[in-house]
Amino acid sequence: MDPNDITKLIEQGIDGARAEVRTDGQGHYEAVVISERFAGKRSVQRHQMVYGAIGSYVGREIHALAVKTFTPEELQSAAD
Image (cartoon, rainbow, N blue to C red; front, side, top):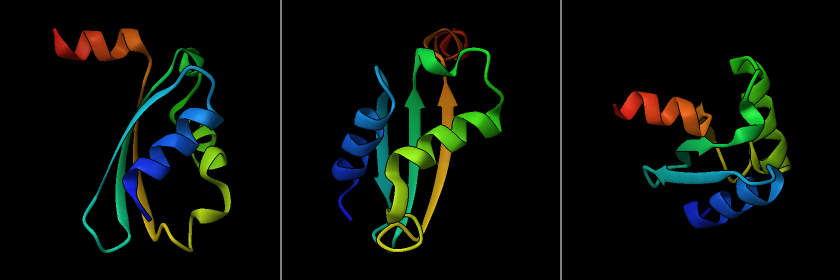
């Protein structure tokens, strides 16, 4: 599956999210997702939101997905 398609699914499934998805070409993907909607949510809740956005593709076209999630503020703090 094309990483751009996964990016679109995530961004459509999580209102206001920005995503960047990379692949090794073997069905393994890494996604970095930034969203205000992650504020106040634990890591597992954030990952559930991402996996919910890509739905049934996991386990089929997407063999494995590593997810990193941030609010915009968390991403800014990490960059400073």
